[in-house]
Length: 110
Image (tube, rainbow, N blue to C red):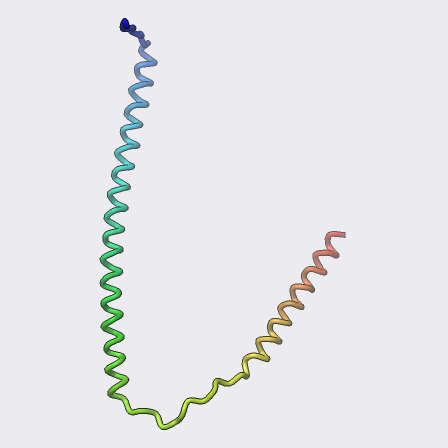
């Protein structure tokens, strides 16, 4: 097999060098972003561990506080169901409002 050589013009050579340099810049920026991402992930992992330890400390403090506080004399009662009718009325009114808006849209389309 014989070697063949291709001659580039000055403009082609400059274009090729520019493209190569831009590719190098892109690769270096990608490596830099990957390192930054790795550092951020490590910091995030460390912060999660610290947060979990703080939460467990807080839970321990709350448990000790519960033991120190006096017990309530009132027995637990069933929760009041006063909100449910209001929620139904609100839901119905929202559904009615949606229907009103749909009717208005239909009127505008005709």
